[in-house]
Image 1 (tube, rainbow, N blue to C red):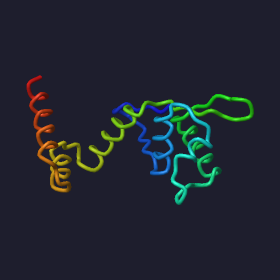
Image 2: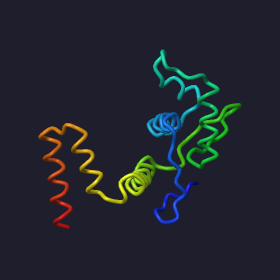
Image 3: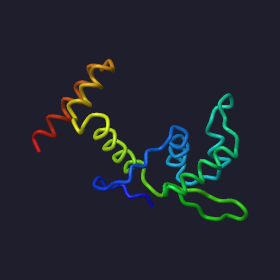
Length: 132
């Protein structure tokens, strides 16, 4: 299983295709390759062998495990989505924003039009955090 601690963390960011497969697997909790392939829209559906290869790569990286069911493999995530998100966020924060949350939030606010509702939610989150 990958080590997702901050100190000495082996940075294992997923490619977009690996992340698509993992998101499907996290949603389903357990799945055969054919189940994962069926998640794609027909016009962009990858070949079965492509998804099978991605699953094997994810298994080598420690993200996925499997159990043998007859002549097939039933795959399951070995790391929680929340743990991967936290690890990816830490990596992004450190490597792209020099560890500065202010730089990150500033980029988000400048780049994305936020609704009044989103601004209010962010304000409340910050106020709650400040009061702790």
